[in-house]
Image (cartoon, rainbow, N blue to C red; front, top):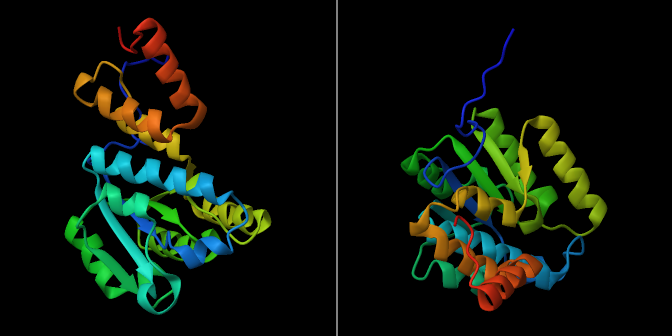
Length: 218
């Protein structure tokens, strides 16, 4: 059978309007014991995800666990991306068991859920497996998550992928929202976030723009 290619995106790719991002427990106390990823890199990746979601107006829920009594505030980089936004505090380790969070998920009403947070093996596995069981599509931003060890993080990712979750990275998330450099209305947003939080890729953009006035899509 002949297959005919079409210049259209696949349905598994994310768009800014088709999912809800849930950022879970990016808090000081949770970060202290996170060893699968460097804390600076973790904060940077979480910031990239948050600013990408805010810039593309993605439906986003930020949630914490025991913020006032134990775990501390959410990272400033996330609060900076969503100034004044509601942050839902919980007692349950599994975000999906919190009625306030589920109320917000249902109010948004999107079947795709994108997760990032600490720790991978508890705070992300819980909602991922629960959402999958209820028929949601689940994506996990692996490098905006972390756990007490590399082993703990990797086994958690394995468990979620085996159950049907789709792994991705923070930079991949940003570029998937942009997807086409000809979309000039969000070009400066995307490259600006990349320059600030995109590591070596961002440095490359700064160099190309400064030295050659280069611009993708031209």
